Image 1 (cartoon, rainbow, N blue to C red):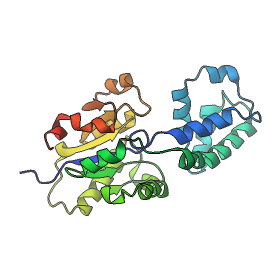
Image 2 (tube, helix red, strand yellow):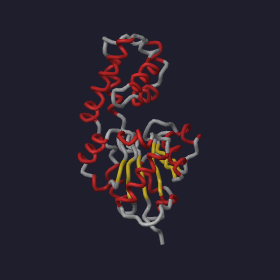
Image 3 (cartoon, one colour):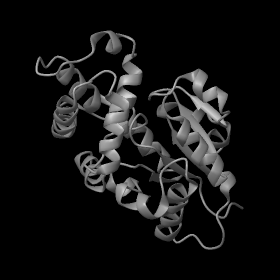
Image 4 (cartoon, helix red, strand yellow):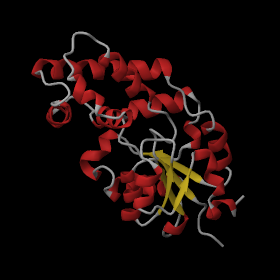
Length: 246
C-alpha cells in the first residue's frame, strides 16, 4: 500500500498561465517612439528570446535587476536613460496588462479538478506571493493547492534549478497533508516548461514532466532528458505512472 498519494508540483508561468503580460508589455514598449531601439539588433532576436529576456527581469526593482537590464538590453537599447525608462515602464505595465488580458490556459481548471481526486498539488514559482494568491482567488481554486513557494522564499531557499525551493514546497505539502513517515520521491512529479524546472526536479530527486506550452522548445527539453515530455498540462494523465492511478 502506498504511504501517500502522488504529489504533483507545478510551475506557474507557461504551465498554468500563458506569458501574455510580458508579451503585451514588451510590444507596447517596442512601438513607443520615445525609445531609440537599435532596430538591426532587435531584428536578430526571436520573439521567444525577447520574452525570455523580459521575464528574466520581472522582479522587484533592485541592484541585481538593474544589472540584468543593462547586460541583456545594452545592444538593442544603447541609450542609458532609455534603459532606465524601459525598466520602470516594464514594471508598471507588466502586471496591469496581465490582469486585464490574461487567463489561465482553458484546460487548467478541469485538469486540476481531476488531479485533486488522486493527488496532492503544489506550485513552485519565483513569482510574488500576492500574484499567486490573486490568481488562486480569482479562479476560486485555493483549496486545490496544498502549498506553494513564492519570491519571498528565494533568499533562503534559492531559485530553480536549486532543489531547495522545490523541496520546500514538498515539505509544506507533507505538513499540510499530515503525511507521516518519509516521502516516496518516485511518487513526486514536478511539471515545468523550462530547462531549469527539469534540472530542479533532477537535483531534488523527483520525477520531471516537461510541458511544451511555455518557453523551452522540445529540442531544448529533450537535451536534458526529462522523465516525460507532454504537450500541455491536460496531457498529464498520459504519463504512465499517473494513468495507473485513475
